[in-house]
Length: 170
Image 1 (cartoon, rainbow, N blue to C red):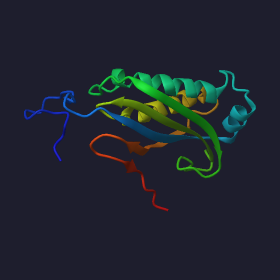
Image 2: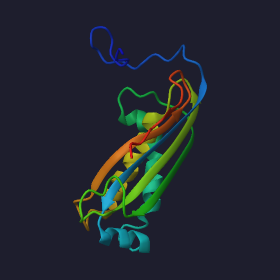
Image 3: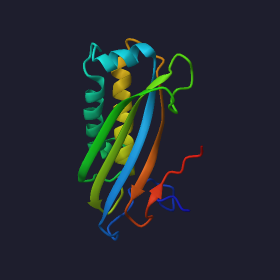
């Protein structure tokens, strides 16, 4: 497959989507940040000094989705029609929990929609990452060893490439 963001001389360029069909496009992404027991308990109790971590992360994620083209150099600016973000505490198994000190997590999920000529995968992934970074920022005074990741596209619909659903290997 040819790289679409480079011309024949290797120069970066934003892909021309002029001839693409306008379709409904949706992307779903999710990611995790592994946290310790103290952070989990304070988030659950609402006693973090910087405020309600999950609500602030949710708003930050929505704002991040709206700013994607300002952050990712070759992304098209899009008129988003929906950005829905959920931030939840995970007690126990999550893909982020890789050591005994960080055995709980915050999960950030984003659903992004538009009607246009290019997809919203980058907006969904950016939303998740900004939400996770916000959790880190609000909790770093307690533990700087939090682990961000993985973050991944769960599903995307619309456009020429059709429907994608991540398959998880158990």
